[in-house]
Length: 304
Ligand code: PPE
Image 1 (spheres, rainbow, N blue to C red):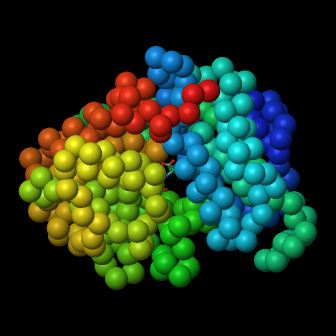
Image 2 (spheres, rainbow, N blue to C red):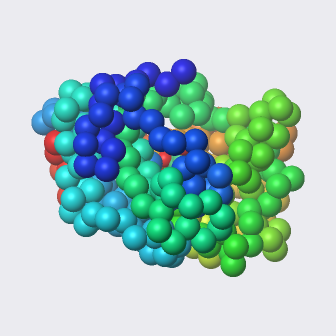
């Protein structure tokens, strides 16, 4: 069960957690068109700080634009509302979930008059793939479900309905005894995890899927920047599942997953079967940044 906090921001009001309700005929609940974000706030020596807040809120607006949803607030207002929600809940470290959705009104696939509503919830959320996963790596299965074609699941949007495929993949992976799924694209190349981007390391160089068939992850972008700054070469190029099998290291990135090493794919250990040197180094730098201990990247933090 989720550990609730006190208040949820709903359409401009801060309502008690248990009263943050919607009508059962809320349009998004039936048809899946809603756009959302996942953001994290970390405890730092200077108080709680949100990691790359602006970029996340901008992505929310980009998702809405792609799907012709008009969010009735500005980017600045939403960023401020995120900060306010963290402040009123008096929480030091949390996951933040803004959701723009189509409210109650008409039914059917053309909800012309229904309001676009916005909620922002915050709650404590530990290691997405477990503390052990973060430390020792996870076991991953290539999914039999493929990531939808980019002309259907347009990858620049983070849309509720897309996660139906992710859930199928995740259920399959777990039912087969794995921790997470890796989805291929419609051409058979590696795309991403059910809720993460993926990187591999070969001969000290990083490779990650190009943006053609994946969500433009903000953690992915952060890791590319951190790696290049650390003198590690990064290539954005397509690769196949067997290239993962023979890579030296592999890891997932995501707001929820942070930087999680992959120690096995489809029963093949990756490298030594333990988190590798490059992965551990990048993970360490990432955590030093989000925890406010790395002045080089202080621009990425918004203090509450
Ligand atoms: N791909 C997908 C499909 C995805 O859902 C996420 C985030 C990413 C890549 C990484 O993006 P970013 O967070 O900007 O680095 N998945 C979110 C939802 C997880 C959930 O289970 O809910 C997240 O990590 O917040």
